[in-house]
Amino acid sequence: MSTDAKLVPFEKKMQATLQSLISDLSSIRTGRAHISMLDLVRAEVYGQKMPLNQLATISTPESQMITVQVWDNNNTKFVEKAIRESDLNVNPTAEGQLIRVPIPKLSEERRKELIKIVKNQSEKIKIAIRNIRRDGMDLLKNNLKLKEISEDQNKQLSDQLQKITDKFIQEIDNKITTKEQEILKV
Image 1: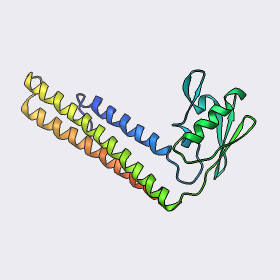
Image 2 (image 1 turned 30 degrees about the horizontal axis):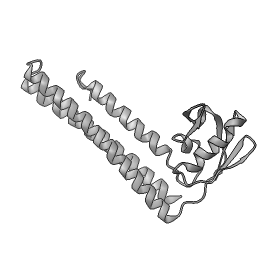
Image 3 (image 1 turned 180 degrees about the vertical axis):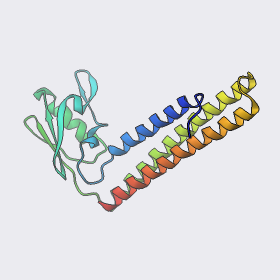
Image 4 (image 1 turned 90 degrees about the vertical axis):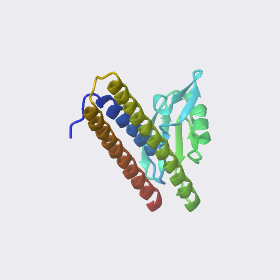
């Protein structure tokens, strides 16, 4: 099904919103080390908060370990502090400019907390998708009022916008289900 040109901007906004959820989900740890876990961590250096990937090389030499090779020795303590104070529940150790971040196994309680976080995040994204749909419906009503589209076109475009919205809501549900299974099985 091709999308009408009037609805393309709304579909693009929904896609961008879904991408932000995917990005956020990748930073939620599941008991296995992954460099994206540190994507949301920001260190206070040079008078501003900076993402770690702009201050260091991040890698995963083992499935339960992340290493952060800080480029400037003066920033090591700030990067270590940012990791320690993040909501990742990890305890980094610095050895010179190398920071080792062991990733502990998840407890059952922490798994349940993570699932709650994932569900809350998905609800926020669903609300954002529905707000985009509402904006699209408002535009269609305005176009109808200004007689730029007919009643039939309004109905057709409204139905198409609802189908696009339903598609993205279903994708969100699928991503959340996959993430929950990932959290529970590790």
